[in-house]
Image (cartoon, rainbow, N blue to C red; front, top):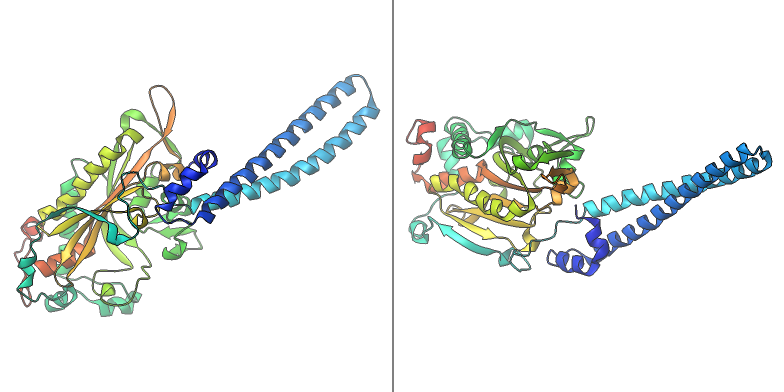
Length: 423
């Protein structure tokens, strides 16, 4: 959530920043007008409370003088003030709720270093590795779902019978490959990040704190009876660990990781993007989260990008890194790098990690703060990145390491976990 003081004190600057994200001006000015109305209502409430307090003081004075006539008159005035106050407090409460909802639906400001652009076509490629187009131009490489059928490690038909479309079952070497990838990621990050096992169901406050609610309510799985939500990413419970807490400066930056199933409705377009492992309602991911001071934010973002890239480099997969322009940023992000891996079977780049700096946007929503040696309290900065999103990494391995029909070589980085040379 944006600090409403920024919006109140410099509306034009906020409009300019949000215009880079294509936020309609009407949404911004609506929030601004609600702040003005709320502040005006608050002034009325405070003035009525002050008048009521003064009248109570007057009653005490007249009681001392035994002036019952004046006491009766003032009591009548107090009743009228009380009625006005109750009415105005309800108006204030309604305005506060409306303002909060309006602010919760405004995205983060884009970072000043995010590249200019109007769409994903304007994202800036800053690095490419292990990619040689000639490697894939001389041969026809089947898409990963065909490779999985050759290996008999994937059963989407039975997954559909059990749960519906866009779910999958991995079996045999497929299940072992998933487990090995997650273990590789844990081993890669264990020296820097503290490992957590977290719930896969979270409350509304946790999902609101990271920015998924209320904006993306329709894309989440909700258990209404218990008011719990299936997590779309491990970022949610890891960030919520410190919701409504004040941290010590000496403990920052905090660096956490967790492996969780992730649940998303993924109402994407039909076609090959929904085939195989590319787009699923449930998938496994190892998530990295950092909580730090504002002055550490950019440094920790660059460090997090290097960390997230390590498993991809160990697997020797062709990759590229994109610096996203504002319209392509996630709702809560101020700056994002995407790591994409090349899929020769579909002749496309697949996003396997987004590494993002959220500035103090999530911490304001979640009330995550830190106290310095000077005893002053500040909002923290939060960051997150996919340490390893398994489905698309698996898809690229199956295509790139295929040596012939029914024969896929295990990447060298995974042999110690797979204990076999071929899938």
